[in-house]
Length: 237
Image 1 (tube, one colour):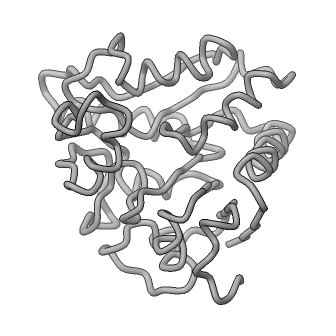
Image 2 (cartoon, one colour):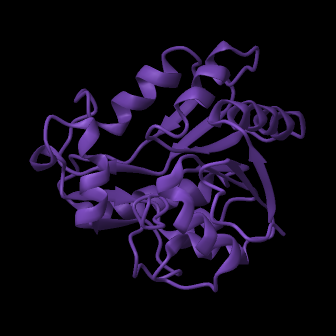
């Protein structure tokens, strides 16, 4: 695991842009993407860059259940607004939040991941250590699945909605086993609220109680932090 600490989130995002460039230069063509505030500036940098993704594939981590792609709070809308409308990909995949058969949709999505092995998977992290929407207690061998969101995740995401009551209670997410299939993983974490989870990732044992610790088992992980997210670390490997 390679860990890099930057003064600001913006500086870390510039480093993430360089990693995207490196992966493309080595022939990478499939990118696992994340939503939320963490990757927003990176997506701005990607959109403004001269990188050409027109022959590439984007596979997103997750989507809320019950939201249509046109809903401004859906992750499909987020991706179009922040990246795809400005920097088109050859193909984009996002779970169908309106699927009538959720299990069938989970299986369909996992098949997409298997058909298009991800060269670089971008991750953020929740304050409770979730990656994607894999909440504490999720088995490490879980593939794409429906998730009942915890009260903490709902509270954390409430800032994007008119109220916490408006936050969907469920989501469809790549499982931890799905994420670990990626050839390379990039985790970005910014802000003091992420510090405890980052300390657990880097200095704690692997535990399903802190889902992000699954990354300790992956052979090619880069962690980019700002100083606030790194503030509880006592060592950097």
